[in-house]
Length: 143
Image 1 (cartoon, rainbow, N blue to C red):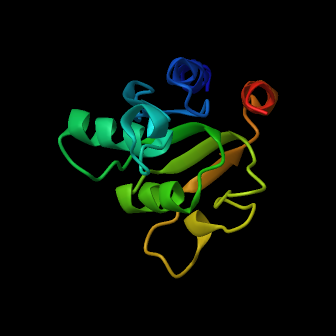
Image 2: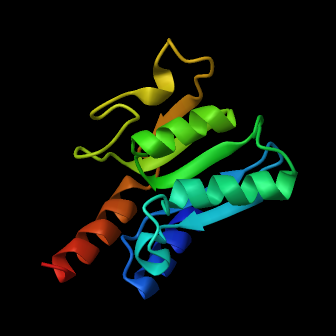
């Protein structure tokens, strides 16, 4: 989660919402890194999770990320939760819940929907305070 938080802090340089993600393989090696780049790239799909999953897939040479863990500083939205399912990651680890857009238990629970063909394990609350503080500071400075 520390690596994901570092990515989140890096997003501040481009005035993007400070959300970071990493993809870790079964050997605990980071194979993908991402931070929000929606503002920097004018890309509505430029979420940290999508960026990290794309980088991990390129690094591994395949779209199936079996054996990998997606670690993210904020609960994934529906797009990102869906991307985690489609990428076949083994688990999703996130820090803080997102009551407004979370799709891993808050508003929806995409990753545990029994109608889907893959359901990653979910671990929550890892360094939630640090992630929440970073987000609160960002939004306080933009009000």
